[in-house]
Image (cartoon, rainbow, N blue to C red; front, top):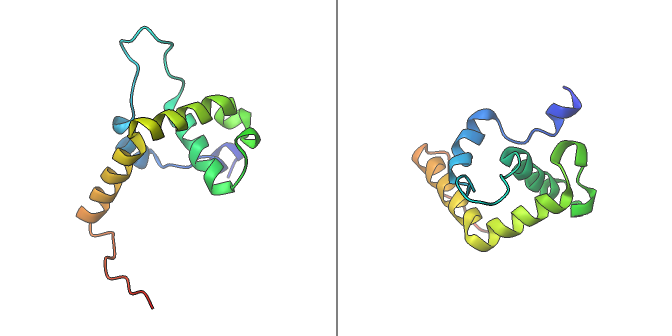
Length: 104
């Protein structure tokens, strides 16, 4: 496993399911979004590792400020809520969720 693969969070199949749910600025007069996958994987990596935004490895995820701004934007506009709802819906349809959870 190479270092680059170690920082890969999503499989290609998982990314294909998530990518269409993310906003795009295609056709807008704004600067084009950088590699969306790299940014989203940086967000996930930060939470998994429990590190500060400033500690994100720049060589894998780009500037921490870009990753943080995109996370903040997606939280504010409901993108993360839509992604979670779709992922849960897909998992439920595939019977990948155990709804029989007992709390003792």
